[in-house]
Length: 188
Ligand SMILES: C[S@@+](CC[C@H](N)C(=O)[O-])C[C@H]1O[C@@H](n2cnc3c(N)ncnc32)[C@H](O)[C@@H]1O
Image 1: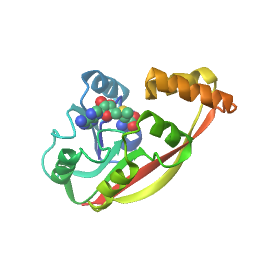
Image 2: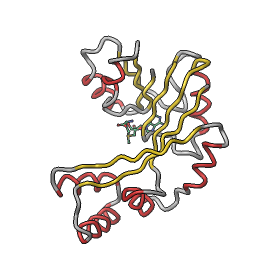
Image 3: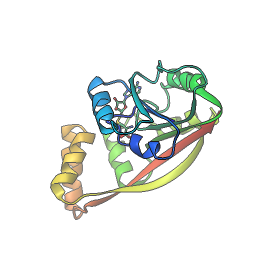
Image 4: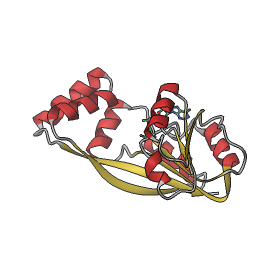
């Protein structure tokens, strides 16, 4: 099992509970260090520094690839797809999770923050390459307005974040935000 762009390793321990072996690949050395620290007690987890375009793995060595919000955003990620094809065993599966800007409160915020992302072009990119789309409705739930604001300020530029927060507060300031994502998958 490969978690590609694993960040600080949030998912690695959960995958390790059922997978024979789990590999996290992540470009940033500081995040690799955090991921290794987080999983230090798991004997079936390894973290390697690397990028999707040049995976530090041998050919046909992986059964499942999971990618959440990392590099595979549609047009432009072709070099990473070539690498997925190389490292996945025949019969393996790749799963890519990305935002769905066409639906949900967060989707609307995302369109405002990233107006150049064309959802139709992204959809065409995946479907013409044989990937299946499953729509998933999830959400954020915060304990306080300050926590919500802090996360919005991570996700968007200062100007966009403040505009979103002002509008959201004026609409009641709900601490739950509905958030639509696409789960793209393909069997190899
Ligand atoms: C939004 S974070 C998501 C982290 C993790 N997948 C998660 O869901 O919590 C995006 C991650 O993608 C990584 N990343 C950026 N460029 C990448 C690339 N070319 N190949 C692989 N990972 C990349 C970043 O370093 C970061 O850890």
